Image 1: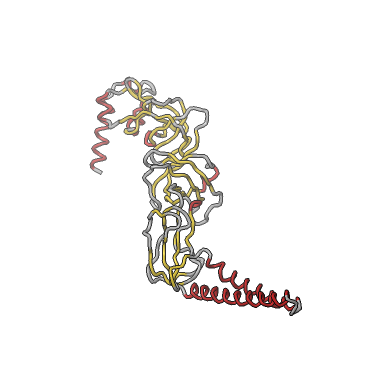
Image 2 (image 1 turned 90 degrees about the vertical axis):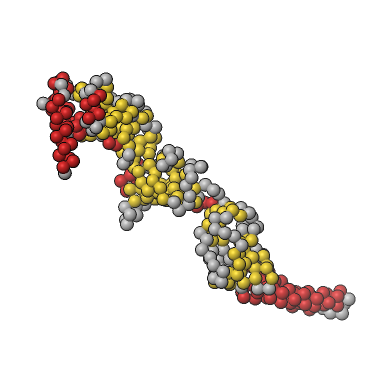
Length: 353
């Protein structure tokens, strides 16, 4: 409180020491020494290639379309893990070893079905010889052919689930990588029971990343595929998907955007992104949000010119915590005050009186 009071006294003393010409018009004339004592700093406005709409948190995720689920064909127990989380792997590389009673039973069933098929084929062949020699009627072949067909069907039934399984001996089999990529979502332990056709891990075939963003409901209609988002390192990504369905719990909708290559971001990481739209034809500039002030009922900035500052009416087109995109009688490169605006406003209003 004492510090604020002291600052107010100093500011009042500085204002009292200003020449009367400082109040003669909207132009606030100040010397360099007065600018320094009032704590006024200025910064050049930047060209606004985009209109900033919001600065929101985002979660970095792997590209979902590149994900392949790693499943197992038979239930059992995980006996060995051959890879590490986030390890790059090649197609056909062994990932896990599973011990499974169901796998063993299917193998035994296949061998038994093959034996029955061999017996049925032998019986049919012998009977065919008798028919060919005229020692038996042709109709005697019909039941034998039916037996062969049933035996062949049993072989196919047992062979089909084993076609993609790589045997590891007796009751064990290998699970191998279906493609090149990187293993993620890895939460397995040796001795763990696993169920058939349930994903035990995920394989990502691309190094590309997405940013998953919860967009506030009031901005959903303003954002479209092709708009851009900015990341903390200054790089920009393109929006590839925008949902229109509002989640009643979060009051937001889901947005997906590409993360530029070389961003240094990793899956699961939380970051901030700036959502923006392409600039229309009219002139716009970007200034720090702290440069915006309300003056005489209008939104303004104080432009620095030779010998002082002049208030300029502007219209805000987009605003985030750090920057505002504005339009008005201001061009890229024009310098505006970004601190000490309270003092400038007080001087300007006193001059207007």
